[in-house]
Structures are given as C-alpha cells and as structure tokens.
Image (cartoon, rainbow over all chains, first blue to last red; front, side):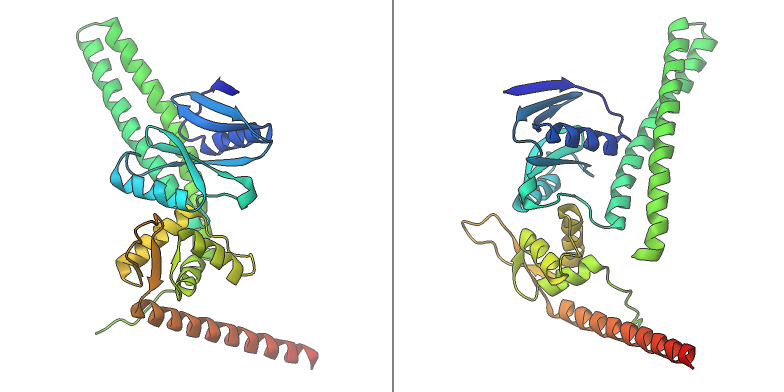
Length: 180
Length: 112
C-alpha cells in the first residue's frame, strides 16, 4: 500500500529531511517517489532501506548527471527521483551503511553547490525587491511596494539559510586543514 | 626548474590506487578498500565517483573498454599511477619510521 505525505523542507535543511526520511524508513515506510513537497512511500520491513539526497551540479536529466546516477546504481543504490536539482536515492540496509560522501572535501563541495544556488536566489530576490520598491515609491503603487517587501523578506530568509550552510562548510574546511 | 613536490594523497585516493592494481568496477573498489583497511575506510559512492573522475583526468587510472553485456565500467591503474603510489608508500614509510624513532627516543629519555 502506498502512502503520500506532503511536507516542506528548506534547501538548507537537507540533514533534517534525511533524518525524517530515515525515521519514516525505520517505521517501515520506504520512499518510492518524490515530487515538489510530496513524498510517496510504500510499506516495507522497518529499516529495509536507507535514503540519501544530493543536489547535483547539473539538472538530473543532463548526460553527466545520468552517468553519475548510473554509477550510483552500480554500487547498489536505487534512483528514486528528483525535485529541481535534488536527487533522492535509496539502498537496501542489508548492503551496509549508505552514504554519498565519505570525506570532508566532498561534503564541503556539496555544500558549496547549495550555497551557489542560495546566492543566485538571494541576488534575484534582492534585485526584484529593490526594483519593486523603487517603482512602488516613484509611481505610488501599493502592489509594487508589497511585492518589493515580500521579495526582501524572502531574501532575508535565504540569507538566514545561507549563513547556516556557510557555517557548516567553514567548519568542514577547518577540519580539512588538520585531517586531510 | 621542475617541481617534484607531490602533496600527500588522501586516504580515499590511496586505497583506490591500491585497489586498481587489478581491474575493478566502482562497487568492487568500495568493497576492496574496506577489506584492505580492515573495515576502517568506507568509500561512499559520491566521493568515489568524484575521485575516479579526478584520477582519470590526471591519467593515474584508465577506464577499460566496456563489455557488451555489462553496464559496469572497470578501471585499472596506469604506470603514472603506480609511480605516484610507490612515492606515497615511500613517504608513508618514512613518516612512520621518523615517528617511531622519535617516540622511542622520547621513551628512552623518560626511562633514564
């Protein structure tokens, strides 16, 4: 039987999302499909699968991404699906612990991809916010002022997420100076 | 002037090169590295994929022609890769010997 759960995670909440998926898997709900804010599970033995997610450098349909996903499948992982550039993969727990990154540099590099995305979104929202506020104040327009304020509020939220991810990446880089 | 400086290899790269003295595919490398290190080194697939691409670019390893019925790509170490691996083993040996010598001297001093 399939169960659909709708849930929202911010781009910087990857660990929280993985932890929630692990919690579901421990209850016997294994992820089989993903869509925007929509997770489809099927019932399996509790803890039968481990799920991981990764933000790829390119679209999952890009030939380089396809090659990477095929490689993951060669190592026993099953590709579940994607949302934007995020891919979801799972592997049977009986094959051992499942991780996508096992060293500090690849973890830091992955966080770098998330930071790049957040930077682009922040610049876009800052631009849209300032533009709308200028238009809204210049030619008095409540709609533009509201849109401008919303864009700047979103930018503030993205900045919060950016600083969280940046802090983790900096900590990993500091560790790298000693351990790799 | 030629620069002979070669930074230390990461543990992942070291075990990948050691594993590829015989042709292996991705999952084989992961299993072999874990076995060779007595279960201490576990290469994750994403890390391994990035490392394999870097090693291919450096020509320290090469991909073997794919067999018709197999989707799995196999890799093997190149002569350049073997030279790098030997240099790393020699660096590690020297590192361990120096460390042991200093620790032994320290212990002797403490016993006096």
